[in-house]
Each structure stands twice: as structure tokens, then as C-alpha cells.
Image (tube, rainbow, N blue to C red; front, top):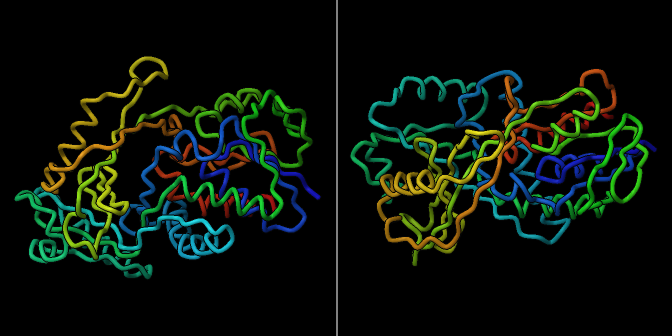
Length: 354
């Protein structure tokens, strides 16, 4: 029986724990200094941009494709196991196009995706107005619609992954700090645990953990802010509520006339401290209103922020063995795509271990 210790229980750690729980011969413990789904997972919007992303080949596309495909089976699987409801918007993602945007690039992507077995549609102004009358801005010339991309509730997903993993025998230690990490054990404030494998899925906490092994993985924080608004009735067609994105601003329907709007991208100006810039959040809100003017009448019911883990000087994410160690694995630094890439990350870690 090999003992796997996973450090970090955001969506990445939870997905890995659930995936590994299905491997015979593994004993799994997941550790987090907080409760699950805190930090960047709790602040995420859960937008799954797979087919509509500009990543078309290699590992970046494999991760997206694998995850989007897995979510179609994973959500019902988790709901059946746990009895929990996971909000999962299957109505696709709509990317609005500004007048200066080059449609040739989108036309090429439509062809590439078709060859890969994915469907993208280019809508002109008339089709956009017919399908999504809430979009009303003269500078928007059309849209690209991705019917196979999705959006989900990251917190509900993570809690369901944890519960399903526990059902399959995974031990969870929450509110526990890691004091020391070595190739053979992890020492925590609750005691020492022997380990055959250690998976570091601690987001921003990964830098400190890897520093203990003299192999510092440099991950920096990037702040994201978002807000939730409420309207008496859904905007546009209540039967068709895709996630709408334009100029990196997302309008996410979450049911009952509620919408999430986000998110900012704020880098630290001094050290690692990033106080939320309220002007930037207001700018995101005003951009959303510019695309969908009905949002001007909405009431703000909640605002929040979270720090995303961005690798310094290298692409996100980091899924590999820690240099110099055969049994310490990194699944971290997913930046803005932790929820999107969680299932494929879990697959990749399973391949390394089994």
C-alpha cells in the first residue's frame, strides 16, 4: 500500500484526491491549513474556456480538451455519489467581438476545432440580436459561440470532490499546517505522516513548501475581483443564458436573476501585497453594462477577491516532478485556469503515480 499525501485542497488538490481514490493500492491523505475550496478556488468564476480558447495544440490544448470532456461525466458522477447539486451551465460561452477584432483568426479557429471534433459558430449581428437581445452595443459586430464549453460553481464542485473522495477512503486533515516536508514524510502540526508520494497542490503556498527542499518554485500572486448582481428577471431570453465574455470581462448567469461579473487582473506593485483596487472593479462593472445595458438596473449583492497563483518566468500550470526528486510531484501554478484544468491535472498526476 503506497501512501500519497496531497498538500492543498483547492479544486486541484480535491480533483487529484478523487482521481487517485479510484486507484487500488493507494492510501491517500489530503492536508490543508484551511477548509477546502478557500483561496483562489473560492474566488473563481468557474468559466471553462476550452474550445473557444486560442490554445490549439500540444499540452495546453490536451489539458483543456481532456478536462472539458471529463466534466460531462464527472458532474453527474459526483452528484450521484454525494447527493449534492453542482451548478453546471451547459448553455455554452459567447465571445462578443469588437468592431476592430479580426474575424479571420476566429474563422481559422472554427476550422481547426471542426477538424478536432469541436463545434464553434460565428454569429453576425442579426443572429446575436435574435439569440441574445440583452447584448446591445453598436461597437459589437457579432460573436463567436462555443456550445460545448461550460461554466460551473467551483466551491460546490470542490466540496463534492472532497466528499466523494472521503467516501472512497481518503483521509482529510483540515486546519493543519505543514511544518516540514521531505521525500519520505510530511510533518504537520497534527503529527508526522510517512509518505511514498507527496503531491504539492498548494497554489501560492507551493513556493514556501518547495523552498524547504532547496528547489524553490517561484509562484506570484495576481489579484482578481468580482461582484454578484441581482435583477428581478434574467436579462435576454430566460431559456438561453450562456456565459458572455468580451474584452476579458465575464458575465456569468448563476440563476434566479443573479449574475457574477468579473474579473480584474491586478499585479503586486510592492512585494506580494495587492490591496483590491475598487476603481478597477467599477471599470469591470461599467464594461459589463456597456455590453448588456440592462445590468445598469441591477443591485450589487456581493463583492469578493482572491489571489491567483501565477508561475514566474514560465508558463502555467506546473505539472511535473520536483527537480531532483522522483516522488515529489507538483500540480500548482494554474493561474486563471485552475477550475478549467483540474480534471486533466488529476489524470496527469495519476499517470505519474500508477
